[in-house]
Amino acid sequence: MSKGEILAGFLAPHPPHLVYGENPPQNEPRSEGGWEPLRWAYERARKSLEELKPDVLLVHSPHWITQVGHHFLGVRHLAGKSVDPIFPNLFRYTFELEVDVDLAEACCERAAQRGLTAKMMRNPKFRVDYGTITTLHMIRPQWDIPIVGLSANNSPYYLTTEEGLDEMDTLGKATREAIEKTGRRAVLLASNTLCHWHFQEEPTVPEDMSQEHPQSYDGYKWDMRIIELLRQGKTSEVFRLLPQFIDEAFAEVKSGAFTWMFAAMGYPELPGELHGYGTVIGTGNAVMEWNLVKAGLAASASGPAANGRESALYGST
Image 1 (cartoon, rainbow, N blue to C red):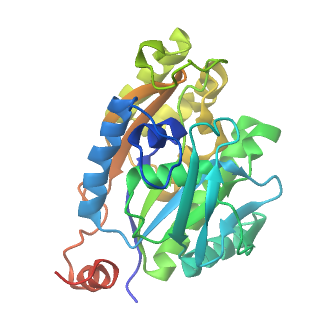
Image 2: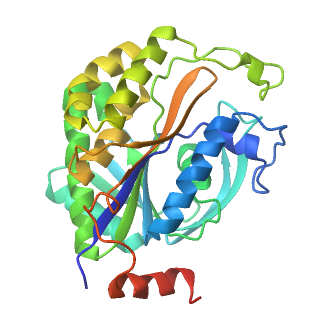
Image 3: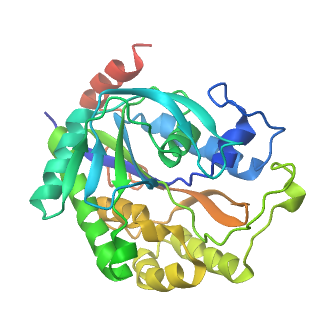
């Protein structure tokens, strides 16, 4: 077995409004569109993902909350209906997905070896949270790549921010070790919004974009500051500012997915590609990519081993 590697990481926010605006057949509510700049951003990210041809997508969602430990989806086939408890009028999605249980178990094992409380989720009727479903649908609506879902332990919320993010750093390093051990070519998805200040009331027509704008000007300025640093590849400066950004912009990256992803990638000082930015109920959302293959930090999908995996996953052409 060849050594696995991380091909890319995406900041992939999960507002259910984006699925609602797209009107896929899996989602019951119908819309007249809306949030087009963010949906177009995901279309650009999808093209990049198609070129990468990964074996597996790993997603860390802040809406699968497990107060005791870090949990991993551990059932090979999951299906059901995912409903957003805040916006059930927008998101009632019938999902069906395949889980890479072998990789999930390796992640769980490595996390435990590094001193974290970790557990496999074995309930065959488990209802996957809307954050996981939204991010996965928006990045790969074909649902033809196996996934690994990670829960949000929320340690940054009941420990200090710094202590909690240090735990997410450990989880990211454990994830990388598991990917390498299992030979997977993986893409990481950090399912996080940036500034999370939001409006308290929904417009009569949710997709009325004349009502959509940043809830907080200060939060918007913070988003632009962080995005510009990420575009310049100033990763260490971003993480120096991260606790302040979290506190002043109520940034959802506090839940840990952003730190988990960068820790797994080794905190590369690599310029991120901004596919797009937009607000949803006033929150700031950026779709960004760190392509380690293009940067020469991971192998392309053109080698003999990658071609064999590609045939198994996508079929011969």
